[in-house]
Amino acid sequence: MSRRMRGIAAVGIFILGSLVASAVLQARLQDAPQPTLKPAPATAPGQEAPAAPRPARERMSVYVLLAWVWFSIAVLLWLLRLRVREADRVTSMGLDRAAEKAPKGSRH
Image 1 (cartoon, rainbow, N blue to C red):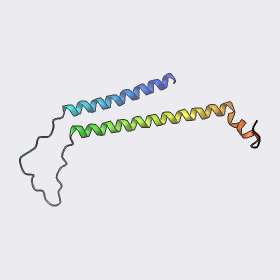
Image 2 (image 1 turned 30 degrees about the horizontal axis):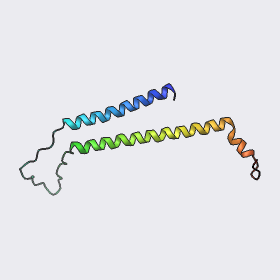
Image 3 (image 1 turned 135 degrees about the vertical axis):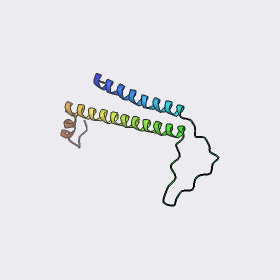
């Protein structure tokens, strides 16, 4: 792996790790919503009630899912890059042309 690619990979891992760490800290600092004893105010038929805030655990699970998705995309791109490099290497060596020139009926 070249030095440039190592640097890009290190920066990507650092950014991914910092996003997950910030999500963990934000989830820990958030207070759980307190249950209220007041009845919910009646809303007009055309109005909707505001959405309740999400619990910290649910938000954290969304961040972890996004981190895994981006990580898997990066791994798939890396594997694709390896396959392309191998194909380029085979082509530059001329092995693909040797296979085309060989007669199909004879196997020596």
